[in-house]
Image (cartoon, rainbow, N blue to C red; front, side, top):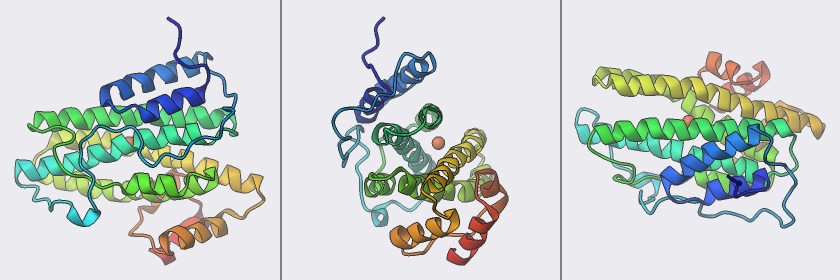
Amino acid sequence: MSLPWQNIFQAANACLMEQDTKTKIDQTNQAQKAWLAGQLDQTPSEEHPHPIEVPGRPDRPELVSPRHLPRRNMHSTEGLAALIHSLCHIEFNAINLAWDAVYRFQQMPTDYYTDWIRVAVEEAYHFSLLRDHLISLGYDYGDFVAHNGLWEMAVKTDFDPMVRMALVPRVLEARGLDVTPGIMAKLEEVGDQAAVEILKIIHRDEIGHVEIGSRWFHHLCQQRDLEPTKTFEQLINQYMKGKLKGPFDKPVRRKAGFTEAELEYLDGAG
Ligand SMILES: [Fe+2]
């Protein structure tokens, strides 16, 4: 069967803009297979990558401001489902974020694309695990409202892979590394062992995703002769008003590619 795409940027754009969740996941897996089989090249598109205010997503969930998210009492099935839904939404966004990192930055080394395609595939897997679990609780993706914070940061950082790597994987996704063990403990408390097992997989994979972000951030700093800690700090000041939420899980962040100097800086910003 012939492929619908010639190069990885067309494939990434198609996966990114696909609205149907199942098709998005199928295409994501198909694109990785084709990439690894050497069937897609990395010739940049002739036109400049287009800005994407709204990536491919189903009509629901309805997006609201974070203030309007429901409070979760995890002792009710509805509250538990709302929590699983919010995690499911993060993973859905993460598929799009990974494809956007491929689609938008077309002058990167081959390994960069292999890395972010792998992230897209793993995020699609996480999304499927959580969605199936949500269905087992009697709900589905789209049944609760959600917020758009992750994609908003994608739009703000769509002009430079260094800025993207600093702010999306190393700030937003890295925050997930700090808080996941606490969420797992709560799930354990309410007896949702199945969700705990899913989060174990996610936590393990996410360390790898943040590490990919760290590696490419450091690579780009080095290429531009920029001191990475200072550069990271500057970007946090510019995009996060210098404030980050702690406490930080330092051993895990170390595994995810944060240097000692960066961890020291985080302590001050947290
Ligand atoms: Fe994930």
